[in-house]
Length: 229
Image (cartoon, rainbow, N blue to C red; front, side, top):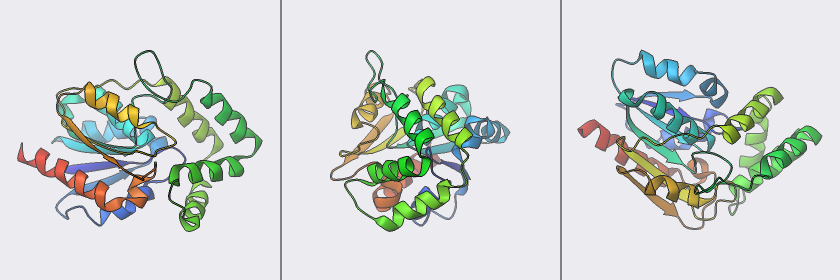
């Protein structure tokens, strides 16, 4: 079975690297960078498959995964969402961040991209503190254009990924996530029938990097379930 691992905004697919060590060798795993995914690359890959696949996404990558399932329901065997949401901003009846946050992000990015991204990665990592991880993320982010960052921000704001209740779904979210509220995962869980999830205490947003064992074990559980169907 093929597994797509979708990265999150401002990061590369290397955020999944620690989790890869825990996944079974029998899987056909393909990383997907979020800028290519929102330009249609993920949908193209899914359409070309002769068999159904699993899509896993972290943060914005989970939103992309939900959207892919909405557009290609018959091709998706399962979804795995880490620290994710249907849409970045809150709307009536659906949790998210405050509506004024995206504009603040735009302003800070344009004022000093490096300073903003450092603060963003620190927020993603919190409550953990690891300067090495932050420096690696900053270095990798240098290859992401400002145009892509702005396009990704627009995607997160304006894409309201629908839910596909009959697709098996596994979720994991840190209770101390300061980027995407845990209520976003709770909302998805309440509105899908084949879903289950875990909420990790004393953990923030960057779960694939700081809690790879937990993320990997839950993803393996979904994989085994989908293979057995």
